[in-house]
Image (cartoon, rainbow, N blue to C red; front, top):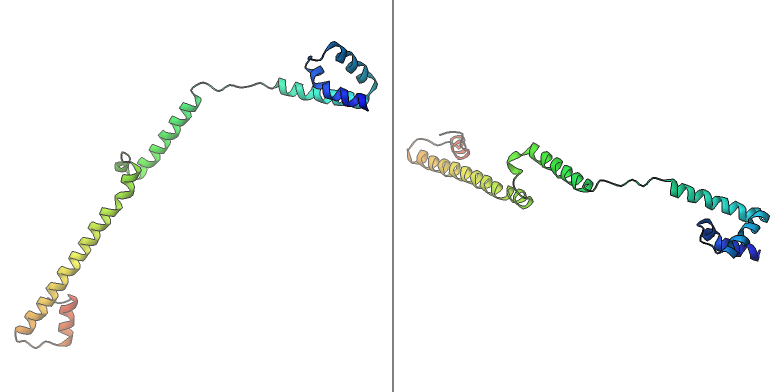
Length: 148
């Protein structure tokens, strides 16, 4: 058992051919007599063969740069499909555009509503001053802008 522990400590050095000559002799004789250590040595040998047998593939030097350019081009194309006039603007500009557009639309809606209301109230006053009989239906129609 003591010899097995000693062999297991230096077995990888033996496998890599880095063990001293005395250790090499010790390991060879022990492996011939101990099936457990021989099995472990065979497993280590197979693992080393699998690791060293694998081919290391190197990427081309500009691989990452090409991938990055492709990604940027595809994102530009995606952004130009919906609104091509927004493609040249930065993210901040795209986020700020809805603010003034909303303000302009609200201003127009308010202007239209206030202009209709003042016209209707003036028409009601004018109708009442004209001396004709003003009914509730006529007044409601003038206020709501249904009659002129």
